[in-house]
Image 1: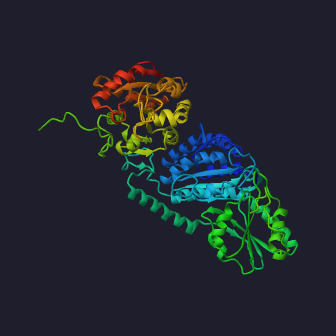
Image 2 (image 1 turned 60 degrees about the vertical axis):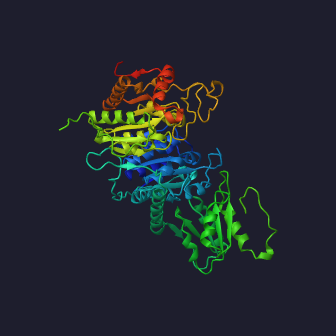
Image 3 (image 1 turned 90 degrees about the vertical axis):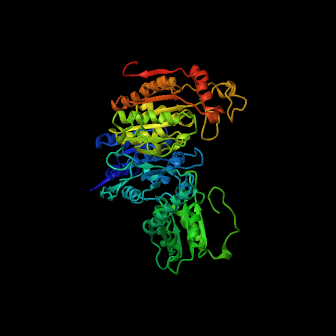
Amino acid sequence: MKVLMKGNDAISEAAIQAGCKAFFGYPITPQNEIPEYFSRRMEESGGVFIQAESEVGAINMVYGAAAAGVRTMTTSSSPGIALKQEGISFAAGADLPCVIVNVARCGPGLGGILPAQSDYFQATRGGGHGDYYTPTFAPSTVQECWDMVFHAFDIADKYRTPTMILIEGMLGQMMEPLEMTKRPPIKVDKSWCVDGNAGKRPRNTITSLSLYAEVLEEMNFARFRKYEEIKKHETMVENNVKDGDKVAIVAYGTPSRIVINAIEELKNDGIQAGLIRPITVWPFPYDVFQSLPASVEHILVAELSMGQMVEDVRLGVNGKYPVHFYGRTGGVIFEPKEISQKVREILKPARELPPARVEMGRGEV
Amino acid sequence: MAKVVYEKSRGLTDVPLTYCPGCSHGIVHKLIAESLVELDVLDKSIAVAPVGCSVLAYEFFNCDGIQAAHGRAPAVACGIKRTNPDKIVFTYQGDGDLASIGTAEIIHAAHRGDNFTVIFINNAIYGMTGGQMAPTTLIGQKTSTSPYGRKEESAGRPLLVSEMMAQIPNAAYIERVSVHDIAHLNKAKKAVKKAFQTQIDNKGFSMVEVLATCPIGWNLPPVEATQWVVENLMPYYPLGVYKDVGGAQ
């Protein structure tokens, strides 16, 4: 039976059903429904809910609870996620499984409270200091938010790493029908945890510290061997580019659904285009660009930013196709017709193109 | 056969301590270790180490241990204790960690009434980084970032942490002690033990502030450093119980 649920509420309930025993948060728009939901449900379900003194406090509570061996989560929005980066780096460095959700808003600085995808660099490049990555899932529907929460906890536990769910504010705020499918957590050994059981096993310690260069280097090498496994087994992408499509449009999250509408609009005009939707933005599905149908002539990247994922797309394309970009920022959301218009421009023979120009405010580069 | 009159507490591992000669850290570690053993909670304890000279404290206490980001030990301890309320959790923090970068975390741990224990080492200086001014550095005290002595007009007067923490409604037990001689060391041991007992009794947040030496940071030989505690730190930082919900000692 389907229920109608907001993205933020779906994430919260999914986490509880995935076995999240401790949630630590701090108010920030547009994710406030999540701590509010946990404050109600954790009391009922016997879990821990703390409204921390700050995002910094919240992520360090997550660090403690993860170290103690329980499934734990924190959520925030862009400026708050920036504050959490110290703790995320520590969790990565100490190999602690936890889930961080970014219901992203526009920036930089205080920016605004409207949706954006301008935290892509932060999410996919580690975000904090040091050599590390955070497996990052970018769902595009409320249903996928639900499913991804279970997955994000499993991947965190399986690889002992913080994982991130990256959505834009609109998906957090949007209500959609949802099948509350439950899946049992993967079984993992957590005998490494510091839960005060030194009487029953050798004492455990958790740290990201080593004062010996070669030791720390080996810790980093080991973590990157883990990242290679994650890249190999956990990269997720939806590739709907079919033979005959001239343009492959790359978009993730909710904006990918706007792109689907644009593709429909173009189809009615006899222009064939297909969608490539990265579901993991780290690891990024670079390989998808090397096996596209022969009909593909152009790649277009559509993002709610000034162009961040476009850099990963260029790395994946590796010069094989021209890569174009269309973006809106500051909380402005593009409409399908903006994307379809951009595709038409791309496909115009070169001699018909107007003189090159940069349209300010439209993210055209 | 010789009679054993003294042995190292089993609350400490055999890892050699990394502290300088004359520094109080080793003494305070011993008091904590002995207390945990005497209260029979060592095997269910979790130590949270800070950033600073005692960054490796998780290697020295013979129980589970974790290293926290600078100033964040109380938040980490909150995460552990809330998910393991039947275990004994303590943070070990210096004055840079607790009284400067970690003020939000320590105040709100007490504010929530988090049921763990904080051992706060106040040596009026940043030791690990080379002797910079701390919030607890005395007026006129020379450090590497107050080379002409701390000035009130630019740096304010030193922060009185125990007095401040005692104002927080849900702080259960706050005491300031010194370990400069045997009499005070014995009192300090009682305070540490009482702080852990407060936690065992589920009374809430407990903190013991220990006035400590830093001979290297202060540029004094160990004996003179100990004297400096008595002559300079103790007059500004009065010893005593600042809060005890279980009744004054």
